Every structure is written in C-alpha cells, then in structure tokens.
Length: 273
Ligand SMILES: O=C(O)c1cc(=O)[nH]c(=O)n1[C@@H]1O[C@H](COP(=O)(O)O)[C@@H](O)[C@H]1O
Image 1 (cartoon, rainbow, N blue to C red):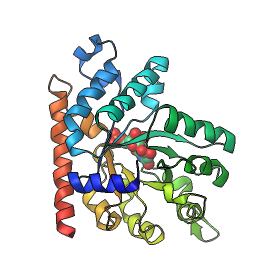
Image 2: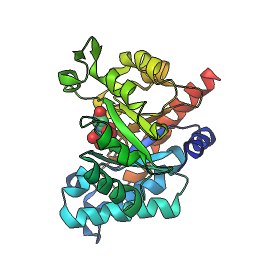
Image 3: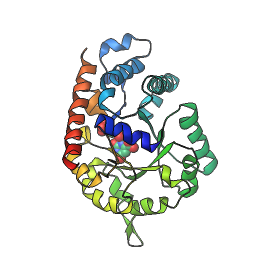
C-alpha cells in the first residue's frame, strides 16, 4: 500500500487506530476453543466488528509462533482474510526482524511477498546493511524501532553517545539510507514527552505508537506533538481492545472500545483543522 492510500483512508475514517491482534488461547472466549482454528475465528470476528473504526491491524508474530506450525497457519489465514476482504486496511507484521543483509532479504521476502503484509517492524541495531534489504521493496514499509514503550528503552536508546541520544542517532542516520522514504518509526505512547524532539528530526514520517490502553500511555499527549498535517500517526492498542470481554459479546465489546478510540481521534482531528 502507498503512503498516500493510507493517508486517504485515515482521512476517510477519521481514525488513525491500529488494532493489535496479540491472541492468547487462555484469554479468548472458551466457546471458541471448539472451532477448528480458534485464533483465526477470534481474529475474523474482531476484524469484522472493528474494521470501520480502524485503519490498520498489527498481529505480533510472537503470539502465533508460540503455537508452532498451527499458529503460523492462523497468522497466514488472518493476513489473507484482511487482504481479501479489507484491502484498504494497512497491515503490520510486528516481528522486529533485522540481520546481516542476505538474511534480512529473506525476512523481507517472507513478510512482504509470501505473507503479503504492507509493513514490518525492524530493529535498527545492526545498522544500514541490515535494514536496506527491507527498504528495497516498493510500496512496503519498514517500521524501525526508535524509542520503545518499555522501561528497558532507557538502558540504551536514551543513552548519549558523542553527546547525542542513541534514538536520535537512529532517526538521523536512517534518513540517509537508500529508499528511506519507505521508513516509519516506532515511538512508545509512554514516552509522550519525547515527541516534540522527535518531530524536529523527522517532521513527516509516520510513527507507529504502541502503549496506549494496557500500558497506560495517553492519546492526547501523543497527539499534542506527534500529529502532522497528514496525521502521521498510527496509534496501536492490542489488549485494551481485543480482550474487552471474554464472553459471547467479545466482538461487540471490542467494537465499542475501538469506536471510543476512533471518536477520541476524530475529536482531536476536528480540533486541529
Ligand atoms: O513494535 C511494537 O509494536 C511495540 C513496540 C514498543 O515499543 N512497545 C510495544 O508494546 N510494542 C508492541 O505493541 C503491542 C502493545 O500491546 P498492548 O500493550 O496490549 O496494547 C505489543 O504487540 C507489543 O509487542
């Protein structure tokens, strides 16, 4: 998907919500366990109920890999379901990959070509030659970890090297990589006070912002400095939406949570235009 398509979908839906599909069998309604593929059945119901409020879905592959071959099948069925039924939706494989060049090329082929995701999360730690193989794919997006939502972000990302924080060096250095127009960045919602500085370095790139909902980040705070003219944000919530209820009404409950977030987003967008 092109960035222009993503932006027009955000404007059409008045939403920059990304729903995280982080599925654990222990957390889904018990009656679904009788289905042939409970994870896919759960995802299909969540997607059907929430798609009008969301512009993106983000399965984190850990939750599928944890169930071996069966889990990978559920992931494949989920991305196919999205691509066939909701081609206007932006899809994110959250797998946090990145390795030496020829290995990164294989990861890129797996997620962009074989599975058909629009984007993939990638760790910047191994540098330019580990990320450029992902950037080589046209109309596919590489979402580089910049400043993550967890406590451990302070172990390395905010440390200064040669007078500048490492996360800022990630933002600045990656701008010079080949096909850097295909870059988006992860910035945690729990780090809202950093958004103003981040926008000084990358005024226009899309940011994937996890950490609202279960991790306690604030949508309002993120938007204060994170929004751009083209919105420029995809705000993710996983557990806060998909586990709103463990009963028969789980999909309706998820839809209510997604709608609440969409309405809050619409109000913010109305306020700035
Ligand atoms: O790359 C991510 O999506 C990510 C980066 C980050 O800094 N923090 C973070 O929580 N995530 C992911 O975003 C999702 C957050 O889920 P909830 O806390 O349940 O909304 C999980 O899939 C995390 O792996």
